[in-house]
Amino acid sequence: MKKYFLPFIYALPSVLIGTLVMYMQGISVTIYIRNFIFLIIGSILSIIYMLRKSNIKLKHICAIAVLSVLFLYSSFLSDGIDGVHRWISIGPIYLNAAFIALPILLITISRLLLNGYAKFCYTLIFITAIALFLQPDASMLSAFSIALIPFFCTGNTDRPLRYVILFLHSCSTCEFWAQDANQRRHKFACEKSS
Image (cartoon, rainbow, N blue to C red):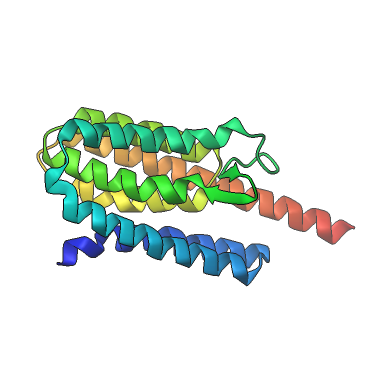
């Protein structure tokens, strides 16, 4: 029964980190609540998916993983807001692409790794990390990297490749947070001088 709550546990760091970032940026509390609501909805959908997973063929799981990555990249189809491409606009509704795609992607990667699709999973991980870095979304990139740690510590996958990918994820996350800190310092300096 514990395994059904893993998607919630894996997604929780991104929500908490995102909430911290929003709080630091002075964003409205109503946005935090929306993120927690979507976390609960996503967790319920993940549990339903996991309960039905025995009926899903591996080729369909591969298709779901690819569609999740494509959904993540679809955020680049719009101009974005201030150069940030996190949201997909469907009329008046804005959806955070990573918030929807990453839990599904983590579940499919887990299932594919258990069935020997390691190289396909590594490709998905690389492509996803690039999308999160380009969006830019530091909280989701960090949460994705953290959520992948259990995958790298278990299984019969190629150990050197696991360490290389983990190292690249760590470097990209650290670099992104450093860029974010520099932008904040610059913004603070501009506000202080005016």
